[in-house]
Image (cartoon, rainbow over all chains, first blue to last red; front, side, top):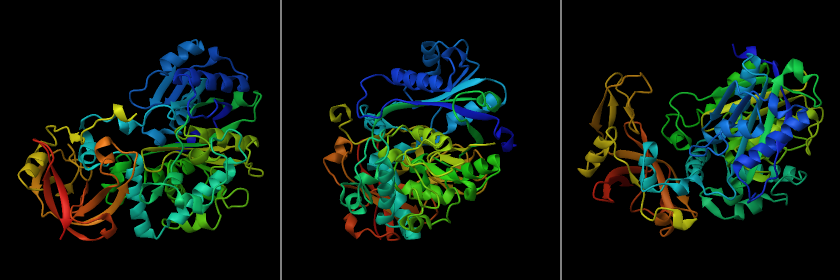
Amino acid sequence: MTESIRDKTAIVGIGTTEYVKNIGRSELETSLEAIHQALDEAGLTPAEVDAIYKIETPGEDGNSELNVARNLGADNLRAWGGFGYGGGGACAPVVYAAMAVATGMASVAVAFRARNRGSGARPWSKMGARVRETAAFEAPYGLVSPVQQLALVTRRYMHDYGATSEQFARVSVTQRQNAARNPRAFFRDPITVEDVLSSRMIADPLHLLDCSLETDGACAVVVTSAERARDLQQTPAYISGASQGMGPRHYMMNGLLYKEDPFDLPSIYAARDVYASAGLGPADMDVALFYDVFSPMVLWQLEAYGFCKRGEAGAFVEEGRIDWPDGDIPVNTHGGSLSEAYVHGFNHVLEGVRQIRGTSTCQVEDASTALVAAAAVVPSSALILRKAP
Amino acid sequence: MTQDMIASRPLPEITDLTEPFWAAAKDRRLEIQRCDGCGTFRFPPEYGCAACGSMLATWTKVSGRAELYTWTEAHPPLLPYFMERAPWPLAVVQLEEGPRMATNLVDDASEDYEIGMALRADFEDISDDVTLVVFRRR
């Protein structure tokens, strides 16, 4: 049963590098830096780490669990793994860290993501002359990048539900307002809906300011048992709910267009299970950290996670209901991928922990629960963090 | 970054699974798989049926009639081939038989695209072994 994981474990330490365009060191170095910081603030030693989970991108192995464990000086790893599917994997390493600790396979688990996406090349730009799998039926037509795939889905969403570019822009604007208070955020200058709509078109209807940043950086968290968490130095963020979800006949982002119902999103399945796992529902959530690689995705997350019905999120956003501090459900209080940093959504996990600790730069008053959700449109994952079990 | 990218238009790797599609396109026919177990048409090609799990399917000629499901116009950054021709319109069409495919629309400029517009399949040779299925207004 999904609830068997409920409140058995907690996040007891978080660490992050700076978020910049070119960090000037390898993903292995930034991983270690973030992990050391997370262990230090938890009051735990690298030698105690016995599980490591990460988000990984195919072809990237510099910061494998093996390399990280050795450079960290971990005595013995008893559990490890890497999770793909890009931003859909944002919560997955933490989900597995919680599983490993809750089942007794490990006692101190590290979960992390490091990515040099500010200085490194875009994955699609490395495409070879011959392409495979579903891309074989897309790339010859010129359909190659995530923003193009999402633009196709977004236009259909506008057609089916009447959503507007102004509503998408409103997501970027509110997240930038939040980022303005966050010293870690890459972009902190306030923007208006007009600024978003007049920014360069990337793939119609998506403008430059509807798109996430491209930054270098790393983030890490430390997970241990609830029992041990109570004796450590930080306020524990108990992991009350954890899930992954794929749904039927799914592909990556491109594939939404092959499904009979393109908005039958993986997030809908991850949402159902994360709520069941925590024994909570959307009305119980105090803050939501939603993966937001492109602004319309936040609308789809609001719908998938039950804050509004399908097709209603545009109006919900326009009415200020995701704004901090007065909205019904403040979203991406750190600025998200649109303004803080692009670390495949792992920075959203850290913000969830800060909200539970009461240390966010856009603190939701008396926040006792935080929902963290990975990408809506690819095989996904989610967490519910709680102050008191 | 640009100098590391492929200069040519990307081409499909033709595999055992996908060869019937490309062979039919070369002969000016649009063929997709139809599940032998439940009759569901599917695209892109797969080994098994997502509806019933059957591993058996028959390549079947379809009507080529479709409607525009969605579209975008891609602006830079793009692969060099498309960069030279930017902005580059992209379309997704829904076949009369149900499945959808990514494609390009020929004839119309993107300002004339309208979701739901009636289309028919056509064929465009882009290399010795690859013919793309494109669509025109019906």
